[in-house]
Amino acid sequence: MNTSPETSGSEQMKRRRGMARVRTLWTLFRDERENPGPFYRYLAAEAVEDLAWRHGPLRGQRVADLGCGPGYYTDALRAAGATVVAIEGDPEEIGSPRDVPAGVLLGDATRLPVPDQSLDGVFCSNMLEHTPDTAAVAREIARVLRPGGWCYLSWTNWYSPWGGHDMTPYQFLGPRLGPSLYERRHGPPRKNRYGEALFAVHIGPTLRTFDDTAGLRIDSVEPRYWPWARAVTRVPGVREVLTWNCVIRMTKEREVGGTDGVGGEAADTGFATTLASVADVEGWMSDGQARRLWDRAVAVPPGGRIVEIGSFQGRSAIVLANAARDDVEVVAIDPHAGNDRGPSEWSGPAEAGQGDHEVFVENLQRAGVTDRVRYVREFSSRALAAVDGPIDLLYVDGSHRPGEAAADILAWGGRVRPGGTMLIHDTFSSAGVTLAVVRTLFLGADFRYVGRERSMSEYRREHLGVWARFGNALRQCAQFPWMAKNLLVKFALWRRIGWLSRRLGHDQGEAYPY
Image (cartoon, rainbow, N blue to C red; front, top):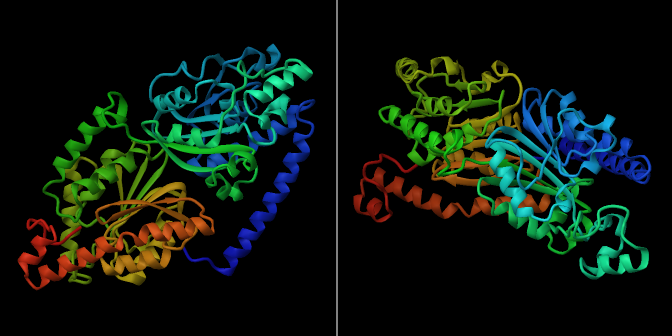
């Protein structure tokens, strides 16, 4: 999105608050060994506030606190209304019996005592460096999270200023020489002896491990204490020293070929049934695009919200309603005024719009999702007041005029929750929609381009620094050759040059390319 002077001032204020926060953390950290409570309670309150901002209200969410220790984070999560499964592998970390978090489970993070796909979130603060098998921890996190569930994972990387814990700064001599030399000079550390309760965990290999774990998607990586310097985490070598404490934020994606819950065969069967039910519903949406809509709707957290702009006759609305959890609100916005009904049909008679409205209502009734969809018959610019609060999944398939499409992206996209998803139909196919995307998203600071399914582009809400914005623009520019091919196909269809459209790979059963 465009950056205004007000936005720049806001960024400067955020930076100043960030520096004040670092000073507070450093003051508390200096007394952490003798008086850990203030430091960890400060971190816990801050973490819970951030999680609620990113993933919606924590009340009612089922969250595991891995490596809960004395329970600072467990207490803060429970105070926010979450149901917390507190898990600790080392009884000595829990503290005195009177400090034990209620219901704490003694368990190994590589074999969690939690059923498959039973958690909405996993919170893990500074446990990874105390576990010998990072890959096993990653697999367990993927196993216990439901599709769409979130994970916050932080640890003190080995070559950071405090990576050796009690052995610091000997860790800079390496994981073999450093601990050996420390023990020869000082004896074993009071706790966290290397190879028993402390292990060398580096950022690069850890990112590769989680990136390779089936079902997990890395959303962002940043230094815990100065998240505005996230660019550091993209520089190999430098990040191992300057990050100090690394945070990885992840989402559990749908697991293809699974057997349990909405993430496996049940999801595939449900999607196939839904796809068959909308086969006769008119609409400009390929099967692959329906699949992406389905997967993103499945991932919306409990109590979340899905908003669709441009429902036409209900094809996409039915897919979204069938995929979403029962406690997720699905809002379909369309004026059904006869406008934007298809290629070159930017305006039309009211009778056509009324006909679309009646077919839309009938299609939802036939699909059995009338009670699942809140229908707002209004132009998107006037419907903003009808939808309160943040949006987890936004699907924009409304006006194709550049100005109106840009207004939808700016106004509605601005309400997408951090970490949420915006899908835009007809990008790199419709010139008007593409111009709107270029204007609002190519160099914008609020959405990362994830990819596309034919002409449906996906964006994830997250703050981008200057270099990330530049890379984001390049990834979108790389789609222009595909767009040029689409425009050639449209020209061939318009001029009825069949050999050219066939040579370009266009399916003659389709009126226009998606």
